[in-house]
Image 1 (cartoon, rainbow, N blue to C red):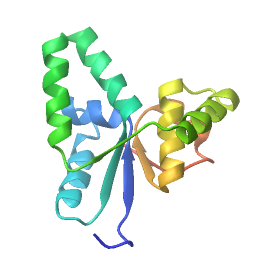
Image 2 (cartoon, one colour):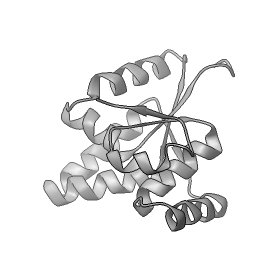
Image 3 (tube, one colour):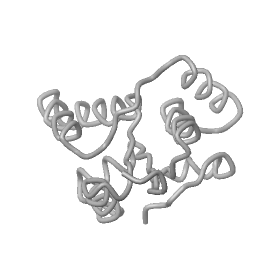
Image 4 (cartoon, rainbow, N blue to C red):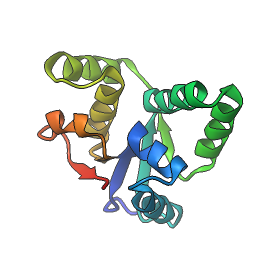
Length: 137
C-alpha cells in the first residue's frame, strides 16, 4: 500500500450501518472494497468493536455477537490495540467534550493514526475541530 493512500477509522455507527444495511452502508462497503484493493487503509479501535458487540448482544444475543465478531475479523481492516497513550488521549477528549467514552477512543485513535473518522453519529459534531470527519448520510 502506498503511503499516500487515505486512512479511514470506522466508529461503531459506521460498523452498525454496514451490518444493518442502513444509511451510509454503501460508503462503508466502498471503503472496504478500496481497502481490499490496497487503495486505502481501514482501522477500527477494539473499544469501538466492543461497543458494536454489546449492542448486537443486547438487541439479539451472544451468538449473533460472535458471528459479528467473526465477520469483522474477516474484513480488510486493522483492529487497533488499546495502549496507555490511547487511553490517556481518550480520557482527555472525554474530559473536555460532550462525547461518550467509547466515541472518545475513536477520536483519539483517528488523531493518532491521522485517519478520517467515518461516522453518522451527531455526537461527533462536538469534536469536529479535533479530527477530520466524513459524515455518513
